[in-house]
Amino acid sequence: MHFTKAQLRGLWFIIFVLGLSLSYHYIDVLFLDQTKVNFDQLNAHFIRKRDSLLAMGTFDSSKLVEDPVIIIKKKKFPININLADDIELQNLPRIGPKMADRIVQYRQEHGSFKTIEEIKRVKGIGDKTFKQLKDLIVVQ
Image (cartoon, rainbow, N blue to C red; front, side):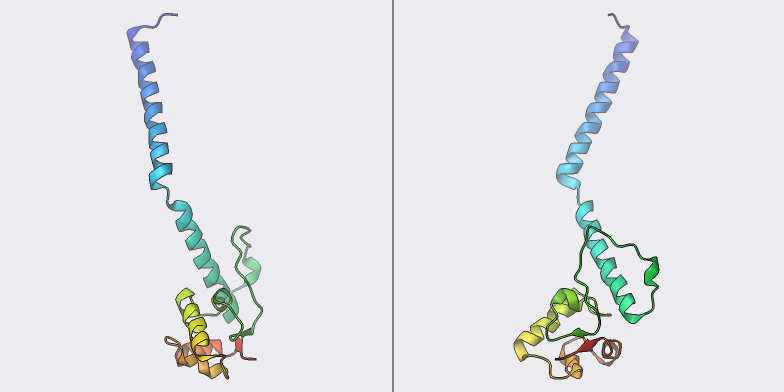
């Protein structure tokens, strides 16, 4: 089979473009692919926020679709703040990962909470936050 010079140039151009695209793909996968981690973190963040809205009763849960990939411990309210781990505490409104860690650390340093008002001793939890939490937490 014989090709003209123009056909050979076209064939080499196609091979060159294919090689460039494959090279770019491998470089992207090996060195630049951070999107999976970022989407997982964003997804976990929005699930925590969704659960906070559900806990406050300001969101219609019938419109939600469960994500089968990410599983976060869910606990019915009220939550016992003496027994809940940091993941369960994050289901409470205004309680993110750092605040949940502070609550657990406070509990380890000072022992169990005697009353729900004692949670205000944790740095970052004031009257405004406590007002949202008081009907959702218990001590036992």
